[in-house]
Length: 226
Image (tube, rainbow, N blue to C red; front, side, top):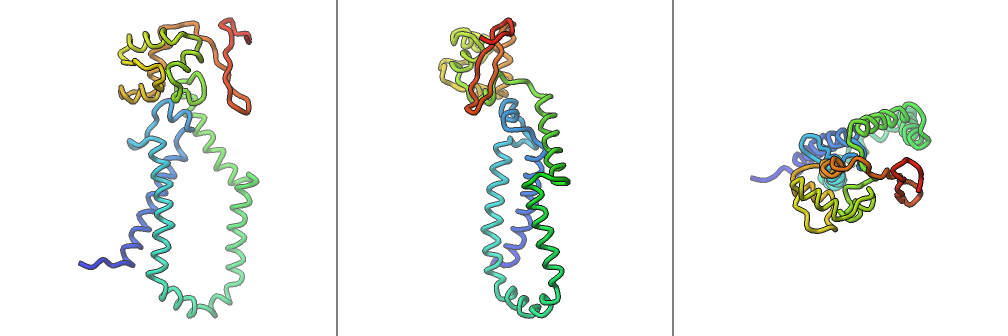
């Protein structure tokens, strides 16, 4: 049975637009990456990375299918333009208004003025909510830390961390394994792996991270800087 190219591309575009709207909503309503990865956040069973992959690849599909859609409908498109050439001449005000609206949205988003700044502020509030509700990491993107680096970050020896993990049922024999990989191997979030360690130690050193290179320094247990 022959495939109707025009109908196929139209349906594919419609479903792709629906999917990019869903994935965009999931990313807008989700936490920041460092929180999502640390807590293994998911929505509708998909992680933040998976939603990002869906969003980017569907957007790419839309661009590709749009080219084919225009190709399959090129003659009707040209005919429509020719037939409506006179009509378009009388739409000067509408064309100008359309360009002004698009320019207003783009410029307003760039210089961050209402109502566009309100949309972004609402997104920031959502992310702040997720961060307040989520377990705190010892440093940004600590899920990527190896056991060795995590031990140094929180002021413990590698042996102490590995012994504690093994005691808690996390079979770890490689100090270069990441906290994220350990959690993945046991079906838990990186934050759960960290919690399994910290519950055995009450006086872990505080970690301060910042600066242009994102370097982390440890504070003394009594709260003063080293």
